Image 1 (tube, rainbow, N blue to C red):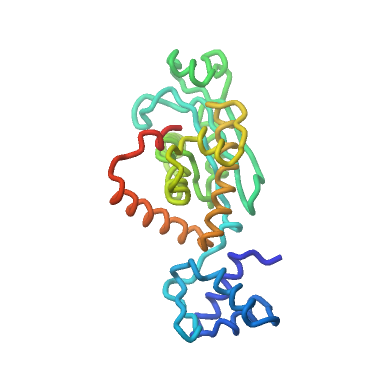
Image 2 (tube, rainbow, N blue to C red):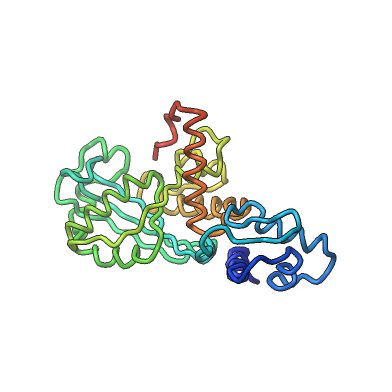
Length: 277
């Protein structure tokens, strides 16, 4: 069955040739030949919330912006979580564990996880949170040994993490140190996604989001457990985005930025909980 994102792309290709009436789009793209009212409703449901498409009073649609990219269901997401010795990605702190969970087509399609020898001691406070001890990582690979595999799993995918700045900063720093370069696209943060797509949800830490979506976290504060839970939250938020007419990554990012700016103007007091892991 053709996904809604693919249908949107096909409509955009059609509209690049010029305006088209609602019923023509229903017939040519959606293959709907039945009741005109139902056919028109299907087109409005697909395009009505998408700011890249505009319809006039006579029912003629035009394309206002660039052609939509691959649908969210076709996009490859690499959901990442790291555990570290501390919070200074550009300082002396290092990764102690990493997990990468790939999401595509609304499901988890691949997984990777590894403990990492940080080359330094792990503070007791970090061990209390993560359970990762020095003896656990003494025989683990250094990041430079796994860097090519990590890079391979991130290349060509959208980097996703909860509080993405933290994980992104550490992974980029480690890849640069190991390989001299880091092929990473702009990160997508599930905290910011939740802020844009779930405005009534006051707290947006991972525990709250998993409770909201009914997702269980196995092995909290370990890289694989948190990455897998974040991946399952991402899948549900992608479903929400598509229901709102956000069919590709560019439209999703634009909506998140717009809604974040709007929320900042109406509620300047930052939610103290939304940046928690």
